[in-house]
Image 1 (cartoon, rainbow, N blue to C red):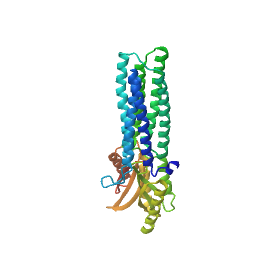
Image 2 (cartoon, rainbow, N blue to C red):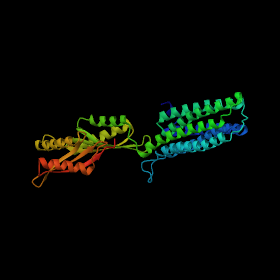
Image 3 (cartoon, rainbow, N blue to C red):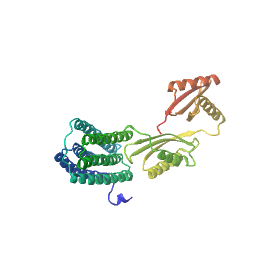
Image 4 (cartoon, rainbow, N blue to C red):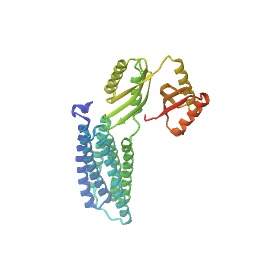
Length: 376
C-alpha cells in the first residue's frame, strides 16, 4: 500500500489525517466567523462554528489514534484499539450538539430577521471553502478505506455534509446580494438539519463496533474454510470472534477430530492451523479439539436418535461434541446443541421437550444438553 511508504503504522496515518483536519477546519472557521460577524449573517456564523467544532473533533480523533497505538498493559491486556471508536463517537456527538444549537439560533433569526451586509467577497470565500471541505472529505474517505477506520469514516461524512450545508449558505447569500431576498434564518435551519442528520448517522455507525457487532461474513467463511479443509478435521463449530479494534481480533473455535488420533498429532495439527489463521487474517486464534467417535454402531445409533428428535423440534437445530456414557439401566446422552437466531423456545423448554421425546422412545435414557447460542 502506498501509505505504508510514508507511515510506519495505520495509527501514524490516522494521526496525520487528524492534524490535517485540525489545520483545514481552523483556517475555514476563522475566515467564516470573521465574515459572518461582520455581515451579521447567522448562516455564515453557523457554518464557521461548525468548522470550529470539526477542528475540535479532529483533535479528539488525533488523540484517539494516539491512544489506540499504545501497546497492551496490565490494565488493558487486549490493547487500546477501541479508543479509535470512542474518538469517532465524540466526532458524531459533536455534530449533534452543534447542529442542535445552530437550529435554535436559526429559528430565532427567522422570528426576528435582520438585514445582512454580505458581499461578493464573502460569496467567493464560501465557494472556496466548499472546495476545501470536499477535498478534505475525499482525503478522509480514502484514508478510512485504506486503514479501515470508523472514526475517519465519520469525519468524511461530516466533511461532505459540510459541503452541502455551506452550499445552502451560498444560495442564501447570493439571493441577498443580487435580489435582496433574506432567507438567512431558513438557510441556518437547513444547515443545522444537515449537521444533525450526519451526526445521528455517524452515531449509529460508531455504536455498532462499541456494542459488539457481528463479525464480517467474509472473515467467518474464510476462518471456517481454512480449518475445515484440513484432512483430519471432521467439522467446526462454536466460532467466536472478539474485536478490540482494527487488527486486534481474537478468535476461538471448536474443531472436531477423530477420537483415535494421538494427542501429540492432534496438537501439532491445531498449532499449524492457528499459525495459518494468524498469518492469513492477522488474528489471534485459539482452537479447541472435540474428539469424535467413529465406526461404533451403538454410538452411531444413539447419535442418529438424538439428531432425529432435534429435527422434529426444529430442523435448524444441530448437535456436536456428542458422547454416550452408561446410566443406571440405560444410557446418558451428553452433547451440545447449536441454537439458531430467532429460536422461540427458552433453554429450559428445549431441554424438557427433548427429554420428554427421548423417554417416550427409550424410558431408561437421559440427556444432558449444553445449549450454544450463536455469536457468528
